[in-house]
Length: 402
Image (tube, rainbow, N blue to C red; front, side):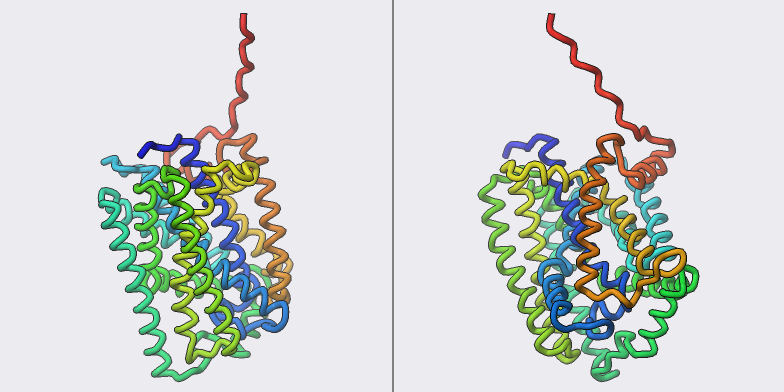
């Protein structure tokens, strides 16, 4: 198999990362704008009828768990890209320790839904598996993902057996909603204690109950880079053969999950069916999305859009953190606007589209002048222990032929 040019490999990975960092905001906006429990139990907070229900269904079908899965796989692929089979992992561990520091600040000072902390910790472990064969990485990845699904469903049923079908097991009640709205609207300092407590719980869950899926997807991402899927070395028909059925069955499972949840009004008795269907569907859909981006990059279709997505992906760290800064300013009170609990799902989706447009515009503009995004530059400088050059050097004019 011939290797693709380095520029083609990076373009595919960067474009896919750009798509992923935009896609995760469509789901994360709910956690910024509403009660945390409403993410898993949507009827807990805000209207869930008409257009709001349709927006939720679109988000659940096409976005829920899909783009965070791609993000996790690309993190694994990034380990292979940066470290490969080198024996020297000192820089990698410095990068992970600094990522952990960024994640802790992000989680406890800004937003509880941080993903950087589990990525940093699992990244320290995943690098030890870089010498594994592709088959072994995929086998262990699938085993961890399956085990996580069984664990979560089993735990959910155990809690229901003890507590009954009461939404309070999800931390949902009128008192909790009122307190959360009041704290977030009161201002940044007022909501910090609640945010910190929720962040601690979210980190515990992401490292224990859901850690197997995160780590398993990372391992599969490493395998997909090694076998050429994420490094643009497979032939175009292969991406079609993988992508089309993956998208069809993945989105079909997630669509059924959406319809079932709405039809049962999110009944806890059958929530495991909804969750399991999307759990499996999201894996297939993520694979299909990835195959589509790789195919588009190889074909040269909509090259301008691929370049814009790639720029957004090269600034994924900055774009992820600035999404938090923008959303925190909008939904948390002083010095922000304090709109928490007042923006319905349809308007949340419109807000996401605006942020997408902003990031798709500013990313290529920034990178036309600078080598890295601002947070990428800070992370890189800290990891190397010295300031890295940020400005792009002006290209020397071409020498005319004699």
